[in-house]
Image (cartoon, rainbow, N blue to C red; front, side, top):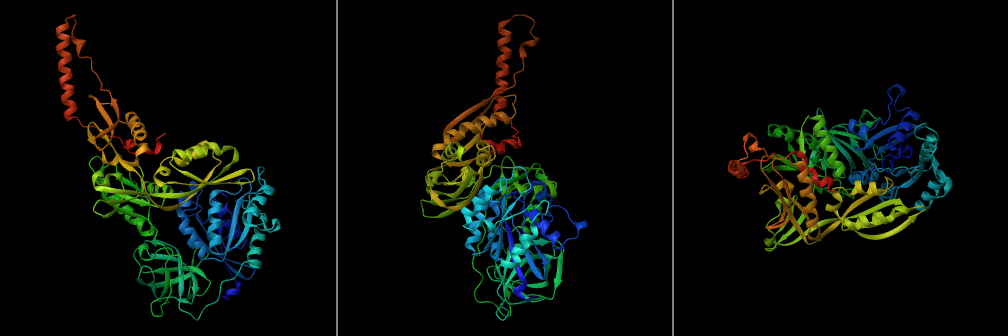
Amino acid sequence: MDTDKIRNFCIIAHIDHGKSTLADRMMEITGTVEKRQMKSQLLDSMELEREKGITIKLTPVQMHYKGHELNLIDTPGHVDFSYEVSRSLQAVETAILVVDATQGIQAQTLANVYLALEQDLYIIPVINKIDLPAANTEKVKKEIVNLLGCQPDEIIGVSAKTGENVDAVLDRIIERAPAPSNKTRVPLRALIFDSYFDDYRGVVLYVRIVDGILPKNAQITMMAAHKTGLALEVGSLTPDMHAKAQLGPGEIGYIVTNLKTTREAKVGDTVTLTQQPATQPLPGYQDVLPFVYAGFFPVSNDQYKELKDATDKLALSDSALRFEPENSPVLGFGLRIGFLGLLHMDIIRERLEREFNLDLVVTNPSTNYQVTLNTGEELEIKSAADLPDLTEVSEIREPWVKGEIILPSSMIGGVLNLIIEKRGRQKNLSYLEDRAMINFEAPMANLLTDFYDQLKSITSGYASFNYELDDYRAEDLVRVDFLVAGNKIDALAVMCHRTEADYIGREVTKKLKEVIPRQNFEVALQAAIGSRILARETIGAYRKDVTVKIHTGDRDRKAKLLQKQKKGKARMKRFGKIDIPSEAFTVMLKRD
């Protein structure tokens, strides 16, 4: 198709502001999907996406409207997938910014607007849910005008649920959105903005052709991964696969390849022809690395092989998922898996449990640390258990993040206290109408456990939070070990700042006392840094009344029996084994 008739756009918004519903209405109006096949959130194909009401995997779809080809990418809204969002923004020329008329601009809205402005996209502002009784369209209009510097009449009010005014958005795209450039006589350069593994067809790439033409059966090369493959089939998505002879400049479509894993074709890589390669790849490629790690152990060790096979299958589709075997004296064999964030971890855990019927014990999530030894050697550790002896360590660096919180102005005090509690530093405070925006920086590890829950609790659910990784900073960090009946449990060890060690030691030993069952002998729970004990709790023993069989008041006989019981309990304490329940390994998640 002539590139003047092509429009590539994506929809960006905060979670639950109506991206996927707006995409549904657009497909209905353009006749892309028949009414009888229509269902809500059609592009959210995973059961988990529908249940949580979020977009996890971005999805492209091609629509035809008034003689134009419209290519839409429905992007994820969550902070964990911001790299995917940035790649899909690079694949288009236009972004539709959707803002909820009842909630206004939120943290993720701002983050995505900054990404869109970086890519120099044409932005179409849209206010959604104008049909709701709680909608405050005029107030939200002012917020958008302040943010984008646009005119109020450029903002389109729609109801994605009823379809009201959605055709005006499509008309605006055709009239004002820029068309892609037409470069056919240059070497092929195509941007991979998503990839997944199909059990029957291999790796399928979603691409935007920037320069040149990609014919079917051509030999292709991934420029960053240095891998070659075959384009077995090319075509467009409507939203089902529709095969074509070739893909031209400006088009968005798919390539079915003969590759075996998505690691060979990562998001952000440039595809070129092996025979006529391009000299320069497209800019912006990053090797996405996980920075949240957790141990996944099967409840029964018999399921270890099933867990490894299941994780292998998920890793075929998810190039950001990294894992390695881990062995714990208490939990047995398992995997230490790396994730992009806590939502990513939650999704993978649920998929392993649902799709593969696994019963899992998940240890407290931690981040990665950079360690410099006295010898000058550099290490990267992914759990506290891997930290060498502190006498050998000269410096430990932990990741810090830049955060952004948008909340009602009346709730600033409680949130600033929370940031200080988490060793954070407030950098800036600005106001948007009756709401405030706090910019801060904080250590990643302190935001991993229950920061988001506490933020929602303090602000009655009104605050929204967004973050990005900043850098690694040297801090006075220590490893806190937890001992159960004198045995060190590696899976419970945590890294923390020295000033927080006493508090964490006391809190966690209290929590452990609640979840570890009582035994027939006394059990000591201790928190320690090296040989220094920080805190102790004792789980009392069950006590059987051994004197019940004595019918006389003979004191000597009673004392003899109690002495015998005491010796038996002391022997039990030496040889007794304690079964630690799975809840004990997630006490840090509910520290407060």
